[in-house]
Image (cartoon, rainbow, N blue to C red; front, top):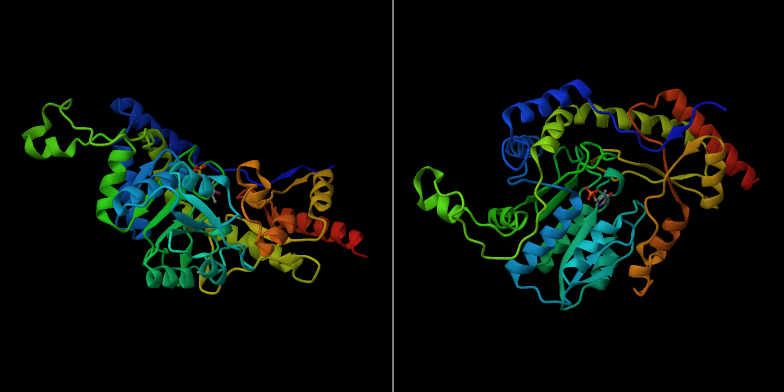
Length: 381
Ligand SMILES: *Cc1c(COP(=O)(O)O)cnc(C)c1O
C-alpha cells in the first residue's frame, strides 16, 4: 500500500523558530512580556484588531471573553448564550465555566449558525451569541452581526479556524465584541499551544490582562511610582486565572505569522484541487464557502451518506480523515439539551474533513478524491 495520508500535519520553519527561542534563552526571558508583546503587536498590525492579548490557548480566550463580559455587563448565573452544537467542546465549555446556560441554535449549509434559528432562540435572558467560523468559513456572520447589534447582544467570534481568513477583503472585526484565535499545533498558525483574544473595547482588554494573570493589577502602582520600583507592590482586586501566553510560544508565532498568507493560499489551492476532482459527483456534497469569504481553509469538508462506513473504508486505503464535528448533544455533558437542531443532527452524521495540510500535493488530493468517489459509488450504485 502507498504511504498513508493524514488529516493534519503541522509545518514549522524550524531554523527560524529555533532562532527566536534561542533569543529567549540567551536573554533569560521565556515568560510573559518580551516576545508576547512583540507578537501581540504583530497580530494587531496583521489583522487590524485594535486590541490583542496573547494567551495559553483559545480555550482560555473563550473562557476569559465570557468571564470579563459577565463581570463588566453584570450578567447573572443562568443567563443565556446562544451557540452552535457543531463545534469543538471548548466553545460551549466557556459558557458553562461561567455558570451561564448554553442554548444551541441550528446550523446552515455552511455548518455555521443559522441567523433565523438564532433569532428563534432569543429570550429575555439572552446576553450573547458565540459564532464559530467553521473550517475558516464566515458563513452568515454579517447577518449575525447585524442581528446582535439590533438586539443589543454581545457577539464573540470563535475564530480558532480563522487565522488569516478575510471577509470582503478584511479580517472580520467590525461589530464583533471579541475575536478568539487558536494557535494550537494543528491550526493554520501552528505554535504548540497558544491563542489570542481580541476585544473591540479597550477596557475589556485591560480587564483580561489582569484576569489571565491571577487578577494581579500592577498598573495602579506602575502609574504612581516612577521607574517601576517595588515590583512586589501590586494589588489583586479580583480572583483571576493563570492563562497568559509565554515568550517561547510567541517566538514561534512571530515566525509562523510571516508565512500565514502563503500557507493559506496553498490551502485554498489544495481545496480548489479537491473541488476539481470531486465536482463531478452529486452523492458527495461539498460544504460551500460563503460569498465574500476568503476562507483560511482550515478544513475541506464534504457530506456523504453512510459517513462512518466511508471513514473506515478510507482508513483501509491508508487515508485518515477527520470529523468536525459531532453535534455536542452526543456528549454526556450536553445530552440533556433540547435536540431541536435537525440540520446539525444531519451534518453531524454526514460530515467528513478530508486531509488538508501543507505537505500534500495535487497527486495526494487526486488519490484521496478517487478513493472517496470509489467508496461512495460502491455504496450507492
Ligand atoms: C481548536 C479549537 C478551539 C480550542 O483551541 P485551543 O487553542 O486548543 O484551546 C476552540 N474552538 C474551536 C472551534 C477549535 O477548533
